[in-house]
Length: 433
Image 1 (cartoon, rainbow, N blue to C red):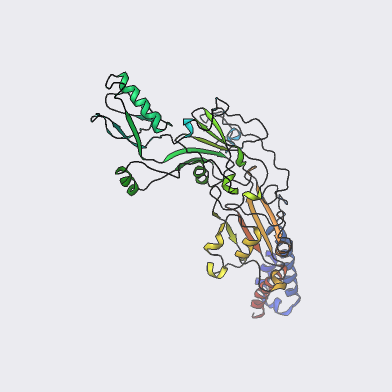
Image 2 (cartoon, helix red, strand yellow):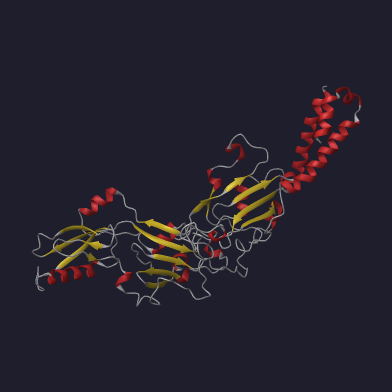
């Protein structure tokens, strides 16, 4: 093609006399466009049918456990051994759940003090003792979970409720012979619940360590002047929300809570169904594991206290770039969609649906998503006509997930019109020679 154009530029009189050269140029251009467009613009999707998103009647995906890295330092000669380093783990519920840090099988009972509002580093408590002017005052739990009282050794209070802490302090006063048993009456009250760090792994969108119950300084000053404090953000549900929410494959009736060697299985389905649910308070160092069912559950794809309220997706709806987002009809409310949005809704939000029926109905929309179980990129292609006619089928009209990408391609009629305009732009300059 480049040789033809070079000959054209060096033999201008020949072009004016030989009109068949225009037809040759047009045929070469059309042949190159039709031979490249279908392979370069829209390739055949690698995964034509999604095996996770939007298909709740599938049999599920088999997941193999990922192993931890075997090398602490970079001593290996190849990088293959580090492919799973720091990769999130998936916990299967149809097989024994092996937990290295769970010594007993479960908590003794639901009323165990370890499940109550235990103290964490940074919590502020008020200690008062009858006739104990030198010991009364406000104390903060240090980073090791210890409380330091004058004349007493450091006392471990991590995860303990206030009544148990008061008993331990009384025992220490009696041991040191500072107070007698009849007069060692200690009262402990919480003035401020501090923020805590817990670990969340498994079927959540952003597994890792999260910080919950952040408090404004103004609220802290008010709590110091009053006895007692309440926090609704040091709970299990808040930790799940802080990890970007549970995924559609989560098993809510078997969430694992690990604390200081103890293990508890919590049922959190009541948050979505409206039934009573026990939302356990957390302390620093707790570990939360959300097992996976390996199957898509459409009932979990909606905004709630433990699922995302909304998320961002990436959209592209025009072949010819627009001068601004207003002209492209892609604004803030298009890129940020509520949880539970489907492909057809995003296509309408991206201005891919509507307009002239004969030219716009044959449009195509492409969804690019990452399977959270296999970590493979899924690419599916749907026509606008197919989406509208079969929008009730989840395999055709899947749900969108955070950071998905949606692209709209114009119809064949629009493509032919652009090709004709391009040919005219090439031929017209030669007519003026």
